[in-house]
Image (tube, rainbow, N blue to C red; front, side):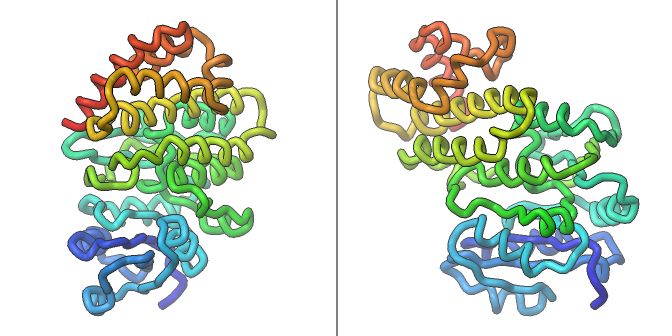
Length: 329
């Protein structure tokens, strides 16, 4: 096969029930199969995908357990000019390959962002049809303030050359937020981006994912991740460093909703409020709460932080409790 245009990298862990649909979604509705390669990377998988994938014409690799190890190996073994990460329980929508090929050949940006389906809900990255921009400081700041909208690595096209030349890798010491960490490192090396309203990716909600299952360990994992990502940000300009404060506080919110006030956390409500207060006094959260401007807190997702900043912890806790209940439902 000639050098492919796009390398699709699929980390696989206990995915024997879903991965064939993922692969089929890449291949269907296109006659351009020669322009891409598919790399499936088993990482500590308890099942053996060899027999399952034997007729799928994919390259099967094996890495240490952990999605970061899998993606890093996929990058290392890939041959495409562009890289597209896709999870083994997600799918591309019909006709998407032609869109991706067009954008790769057009080659007007260093990274392409696309919208996705979350269940039946469409999540757009932009309201207009398509936007090319080289205002990197402005866009990185915007994305740091909305990491769950912009900084996951799927539904994007990355230039392999930029990844390789700058030795950009997934941080395999991070259990959480490794997607955002990688995206930030990559964006800081970009000169231009494209935001495309097109919905191309179907995200299949998984309540059993590491991020969503209550395990009592996420607080320390997120604190570690925030500190690791700060090493990337600390020498950037003031606008990006200020946006990082929002990034930290959004992860504080995630800790409260998915860990402290999660319905599977059997601690009583009084203890949960105590834990909320204690976490708010730990670095880097205490610094972020101190530095965040009041004007940045009058948004629905940041209102709990407003109450924490003025030390009305019970009001903040009630909001997190309700949000955690809605999330679990």
